[in-house]
Amino acid sequence: MIFSVVLVTAVFVQAISGLLNGNVHTDTTRSPDGAVFHQTLAQLVVELDKRVNDLQTKVNALETEKHDYIVKNTQLETEVLTQRLKQESLQRMFQQQNASLMSLKTEVDVCRTLSFQLNDSLQNLTDGHEKLKSNLDIVKNFTILPMKNDINNMQGHISDILAAQGSLSGNLSHAQNDLHDLYAHVHQEKPGFTAYVDGSFDATGTVILPHVYSNFGSLYDPNTGVFTADRSGLYGFYLGIECVDTGTKIVDLVRDGSLIGHAVCFPQAGLASFGSTFSVHHIEKGSKVWAKNAYDSGDIELRGKTTLSGFLISS
Image (cartoon, rainbow, N blue to C red):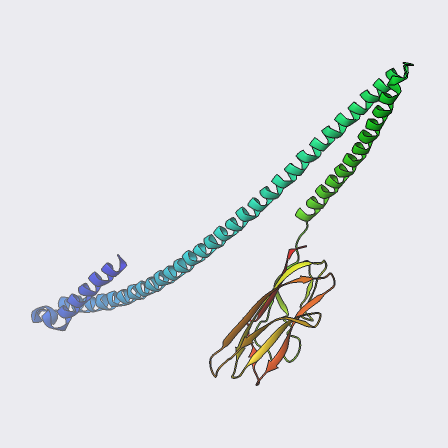
């Protein structure tokens, strides 16, 4: 709209300029009134030309502002898409965790049902024992000798029942302990970590990765690069390295100084190289796991894609 007004005004100014530059009748300009009219038209042309320039400046400013709005809108759309993808990922993780929790809840319900059944069986045995004791008291009131053997047999059965009752009590205690252990296992957080390096460095001994993405249980020390197990169990460890320069580099994954895996890379001039290893081992409580430089054929640096991860699989 503003551009159209500017265009029309410019055409009008050109028309008046044409009149002033030769299209005005000579008799008009010779008369005093014609000279005044000519001067007035000249002033009007200057004023209109100034306004046209002002309007053109505003049009240019509006075009620039429009372009800025388009760029900002594109950035906002990109950010909205990124947030939506993150939300979908978190929702999938939540669904997986919920499914695991429901499975564990089912196991707990089964154990609870078994405990109730054992309690009912124990109560039935106790009631039977009380009935047998009552019957034994009745039999004792008779003086018939042949019944003594039956009484002795009944006492033997009673002893067996009492022994079975003790065994069931022990089984019930074990079941209750198992339920307690299962509950503790379900609600116990498993240790795990992922560490990385920001930038590049030349590792000559222990590979110390000072930054962590996660450190559940705080068992990885970013100052020393060492993971210390707080419980015995089956653990998984991953080591990935990125190398630059030229040559061969080997980084070992060790447990208490013993080799459990190694990663190798062969970088060339101007081309990075990657190597990795994944190892599953039984780790005792108090054992330590770390990465260390084993071989370097030259001045080879480790870069930012170098990571070390570990986690408890089962205990």
